[in-house]
Length: 334
Image (tube, rainbow, N blue to C red; front, top):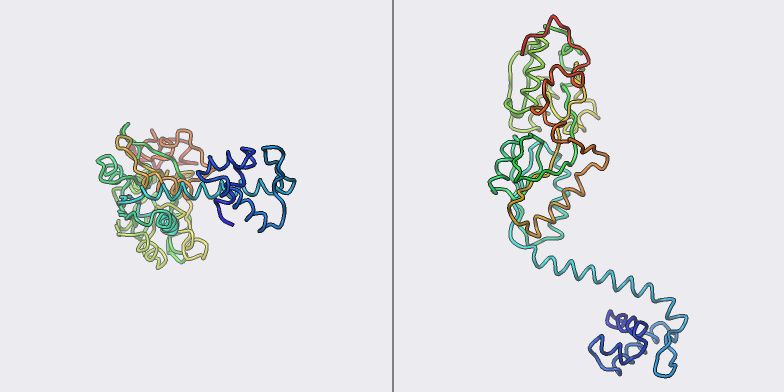
């Protein structure tokens, strides 16, 4: 038994005669008879009864017809995938924010290579969302998964994927007083660690420190979140960073979150593409995999760009949505 036999069986039921089924399958009536006989021998049942010129399906034939159609439909989907994969060639250039969870990206790339083995993935990391935005805008990247930085030209499309909560993080045995960032005029004798001191979160947190009149020992810029994790775990300093990046360290207790008057501050994660260029099958496939694996189904996407971009928030230091309470006597004019 093979797929042609199943196709011919389905055709005989639909067309009613061996002759019409033969036309549909581009073979002779005798070939149709051979395939039906082969299927009957395989199943050990009679499938058709001749009534005049027509072939009337038996009860057994009607019983197996849904399963036969399911098999043929499934194979049709496989054939379409095979045809699609013919177009999945060349290379795809994708930009990634360095702080995105590497395990999730690795799974996406693995699935992509299974479906598109002939496409080369060229991945480029960046510690700034601005750099990724610029490269997608200039067509130097086909797409990017980046933190939201706002101010996107109309030629760029943005698809909200998720958001990461920001918090003050330090080592479990850190010498910083637990409420130091809620005490006006505190002197933190450890450095503020950042991936990029010019990034939105770093600038945002520096403004908070100034607002609270809190001083720190120094500012330290490192080249990866792995390096930041090592410094935090060894109680070298503190950071203001997306919480999910340090999920494992927070769960095992090597890193902790320090309280502050900041609340509900998060960074949006988006899929970024250039609408002015035609999208290749490879880019379409990668986009679907990214959305399928990184998109949060419960995410509130209304006004997402404005809500998850620190620089887009007007008067965010004075907003009740940002601060629970700020003592008036420690608030320098920013």
